[in-house]
Image 1: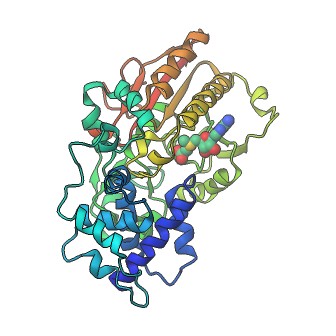
Image 2 (image 1 turned 90 degrees about the horizontal axis):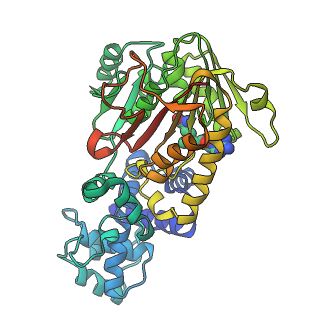
Image 3 (image 1 turned 60 degrees about the vertical axis):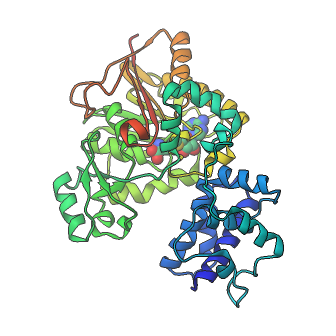
Length: 430
Ligand SMILES: C[S@@+](CC[C@H](N)C(=O)[O-])C[C@H]1O[C@@H](n2cnc3c(N)ncnc32)[C@H](O)[C@@H]1O
């Protein structure tokens, strides 16, 4: 594709995202490229990169368009992005070429906009703090409550780009051997500092195309998510429940720490997500796991009350800790979503708690950085559940010393280089 044709595709993709604002951007992009198989890998990456740069700086770009009195559309956002985040050798006047596959030439108004923004810095001192930090206005006070004096630094890193982390599957290989095999395929990974099973790959590399990935030796999993697996401390021979298992990201990790021995049940209310687990479990060589779809009125949980050594609740949450990967999620999140999610978290936690055996552990985790979903949720659960108390990590579970404070772990991209993750370790004492 010519640079102009790539820009035209970026305008189309961004327009589709604007037309379906509640849909995650990566789902829109996947569907977009599926319908346009003629767009090859390199072009796809270039188009996505341009669109994601807009998503990452959505509020900055919107602010500038508002100052210019120009409606925000896919075209105007991209013109603003080209002027405020210029790339060498690129100019809207040239790329909006009007040729066969390129976008229509700039209108007089768009030319005026381009001229007005040329040479301006993306961030302006007159911008409100929420715009500067690329967060919804209503959320800023909540983030300030979480991060205190570190607000600006923490949220700026959350707005950056994520690392690519792998969890080595010890059921099949060792960390050294996996790193060696990846290096043979041209991918040089470094050992993670917090997770004992992690490898960090610089930049965007095609890990899923490697023999190591295809053979189930490594799984893509953020280091923070691996730390949740360590906090769960699922050991060989235990009965373990992954209550919100999704496509089994953490089930895979726990099956590994269980050395494939004992029994693990992966539950979820979403059939497609649980379905997604099948291939991953097979690839990883896990054979101590079963899946269970939770349906309304299900008696499954009642029959298994008090029977699990470990219950992990990887709760549905705002995902504020994963904004580096999903910058568009910031735009979709509403106050109402947060209210609904905290209510759901409370309900899930109290049901899941009934499944823990006396002496067993309940691990509550989110990929959120908000107190309401994390520390406050645990405080309110403990206030109404005297049979549980916070517990320290078990020795040998793989967690670095001192990561947990009062049985709780709060990871952030700034302090730990991981996604924002929270985990609380609770023990059933009666
Ligand atoms: C954070 S995701 C889980 C991610 C998964 N554990 C992993 O590591 O890949 C939360 C999951 O909770 C599930 N969920 C939502 N409501 C639920 C409920 N009432 N009971 C159990 N699972 C629920 C969602 O379908 C979603 O898959």
